[in-house]
Length: 146
Image 1: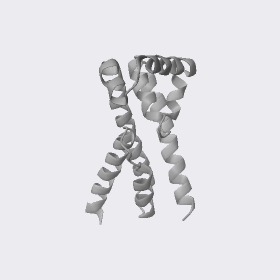
Image 2: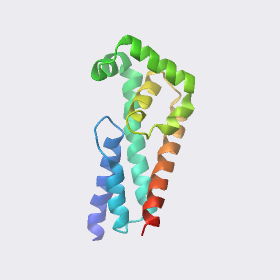
Image 3: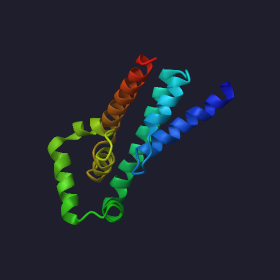
Image 4: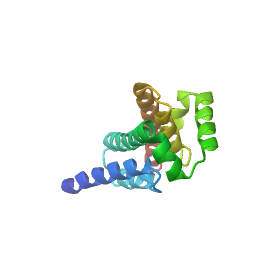
């Protein structure tokens, strides 16, 4: 069984990474399955967080280097909507990155943070904190049901 756990961790990493993109992937289902199969919760939370943060970092880089050429056409966003999204992000500040894990709004937040050239260390701290807390809470809730 130990041999297969490596693949389980890789699967969790990949699902967490992809969940941070616009793809409709749910890393929580994979995490729950692995928790229910008695894999180490600390390692699972770490792997899920790392994968999800890395996916958000990819979004940040895309926003940083290609906000006009990639984001707007891909999401079919008009110039006006793009400007409003930037203004909203500026209004709520970098603390809004703590909720980058929220479905639908999280991925655009990480793109916009890149487009606005938010400090990468601030981005990393905020996004990692929010995602780590989320996976820890989900894991705790699942393990409490056992």
